[in-house]
Length: 184
Image (cartoon, rainbow, N blue to C red):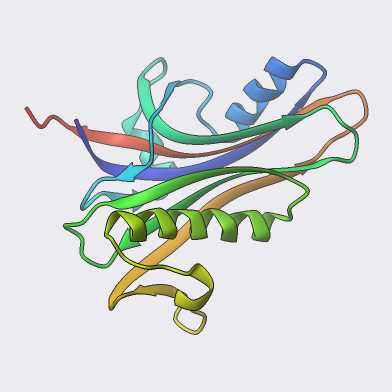
């Protein structure tokens, strides 16, 4: 099975019970009705990133769905947590890209998202056998990475939250594969 489409989603949940805070985060991300199966980090060649609202139209309640997931949780009051998915897509659509998951404590949302993008771009570069320093390769003006003449676009989806007294908080971010093609 090769994914043809994915969407990015995120959510946050608060509850006195740890499991129920995760359920609330899934509801916030609009994927609580699905059976999520975590997979590793390859974005198939020619896989399109579509809006979550469109991707959800492909899925039915109870369906087993593959995703790259980031999840973090705390019951510590005032503790900041983040969950982030980074995406690195090469300009050559016939080459696979990468998805990264990042879970952090104490980071701001933008910092966690940028870090997840750097991770995805670094994994892609090393797979292609390229030397890569995310700080030197980033083209701020064009918002792209340049790797040995190859252009890579990145993005992220990141959920940040702060712990509340007496509650568990769960942050959730995911890249959900929503249209698969049998390759047998």
